[in-house]
Amino acid sequence: MSDVLRITKKKQAAIDVVCMSGRLDTNTAIEADAELKTLIAHGANQIVLNLKNLNYISSSGLRILIIALREVKKKQGDLKLACLKPAVKEIIHIAGFDRLFSLYETEEEALKSFTYVAIDEKERRILDAIASTLDIDEDRRRTEGSLQQSEILYRTIFENSGTAMAIVDDDLTIYLANTEFEKMAGYTNKELAEVISLLSFVVGNDLGIVTEFHELVRKKADKLPQHYEIRLKDRKGNIKNVYVILDMIPETPRRVYSLLDITELRKIEEDLRHELIRKREFIILAAHELRTPLQPVMGYLNLVLDDPESFGLNEDAKVILGKCSKNIDHMRDIIEHILKLSGLGYGPEQMLPKFRPNYRKISPRQLLTSYITVIRCSSDITVNITISDNLEITTDSEYFYLIIQSLMNNIISYSKTPAKITIAHYDDETNNYFTIRNSSAVIAQEIIPNVFKPYYVGDESKLLEKSGFIGLSLPLAKQMAEKLNGDITVTSNPENGTAFMLVLPRSAIPG
Image (cartoon, rainbow, N blue to C red; front, side):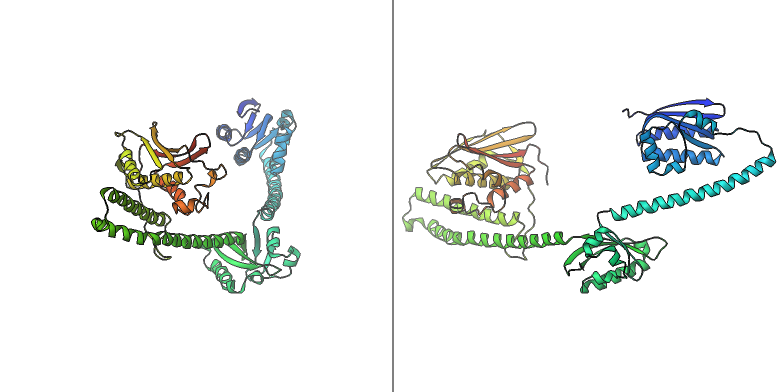
């Protein structure tokens, strides 16, 4: 079926015949409107539309036909429709426009329906009077028909809106309610018609809200619609949270109430609120549990490092203990960032500001080397960095360091000893790609989809004991990567081990 509208015109005596074929819809109505307006502007007031080859007409098409009919009527003319296909005829019938237009089976019948008998002035006045009377009667019938159609339309919309609706009188008596309101209230429309007030459904403490807004609508109709939230009780006494939109019906004292049941939404919000409280308490407790054992360790290390000779430490021992001290400092940094990136402070009321990335050029190899130096106090970990000394990227150095630290700690946690880790880099026109691979680490396939979920612990028996990240390390690392407009992915299998990939854009966009 063609979407193109084709229009041809011809003249039959004093009558203009316009043939339309194809589709008369939103896309083609503008063209048809222009053609008809031009024709009428040049004096045409008797028009036959031959729609023999018109396959479809939309509401936009119907509108331009109505406009054309109105214009020719102003010129004491008429516009008649001929040769309608069943589908088009059905659309015009459903719209009720067969009461406005004269419809003919053939073009010839439509042409013959026009009368061209010359009449004198006296006869013209008589016929004009008769025509005026007929026009008034016809207009009245059409108006009545349109009103009936409008009432049917609005009742259909009212009944099938999918939202509980009630029309309420000025004294808050329910005048009419749809099926959805019946379901919400637990009463039938017949029962509601027995002078039941809307207030009988409102929970006591919310009665004032309803009466206040009802009165406000009466006094300040220019500020409509009003909307608010109340609690309703149904026939069985069940309490429901309801979002209300209130509006006036023009030229009447009645109001329309639209009510949306948000009980389930409020329950979800309450559950979420409790979950957020639980999360906050969990993180505060976890941070406290992580800090507590670090304090005495730092104290002993500082004591020993401040006076190594008294404790008989040689140079190698001092280097190792120095690395331990740096490692603990990094642990404390991670704890602080867990709090910072979780939007939490040290207590329920203490909030830290959101961290904004500080972009600058860094050397990934230099930062990685400084981190590897810290963990090399463990003899069973071998790290090979295959990244050029000349590589520089633009990113946040602190975020980059903490992401690598999180990925390294996790990939070691899943590793068999000794751990052999390779850190590599490649790039393309858009991104930098950093891979951290441990051939001896394998993550079970059922765990992989969950490793970036908050509070998820893949191997409770080992991960907590080794890393102490309580299921937050990887989610926070991913969050940091996303703040840098990047991402982290993971793959794992017995043949190649586990690989984390950190993707960062080559062109940093400060957030």
